[in-house]
Image (cartoon, rainbow, N blue to C red; front, side, top):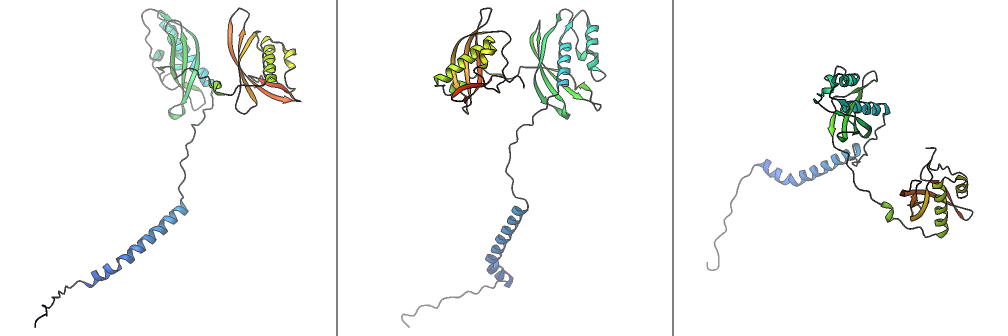
Length: 286
């Protein structure tokens, strides 16, 4: 008949029942998995919550004055020698060397010459392996100039001091030029305070304790310089942070004619409407 199209074709494909059930259940299983993961994550946060990473400051090293002196004494003997007396050099180092190091701490003296340490001082310290203290000792010598020697010191089971191996010649500690931080502070703009500070410093430098006492608080403890100085001028007077202290840069003259630029920190308070000084630069009881 006209107007009647061909019948459509239907294709029947067989699929396993387990696969049909799995495909229908996948969304449900995915939802179960997400829920289980959330429960596990919540439990983990409750049992072991994450802790913030804390940057800890380096542990302060408690000074061991005896170990410092031991390192300095060794450095002085190690760097002081005379080529004509090798036996005396080895003998001076014998108490330090013991049986752990070679004779004379491994030093073979040159055929000529001599060297003496004029002064030595610890300028650095760190904790090395197994708790040993490693000191940097600055040694001023008469022939080689300033030498820096690294000396490791340890304590034995009995508490005795001992070298922790051979020393090392090292470079100087890092240093930079001075930074006048006070330049960034506010100027003192109080004429009364300026007058008190100048008068107090003039009497302080001159060692005039009775006159100085008039500008001090009752609780102030001040120790004047041993060698009197003459105050020439106060070139800077700044407020330090907090408002309870001022910083003064002064020019002073000494008895031999030299002129010095000096800096002093003074604690100041108002008592009965006038400025008084409670401390100048240092506390003689600390």
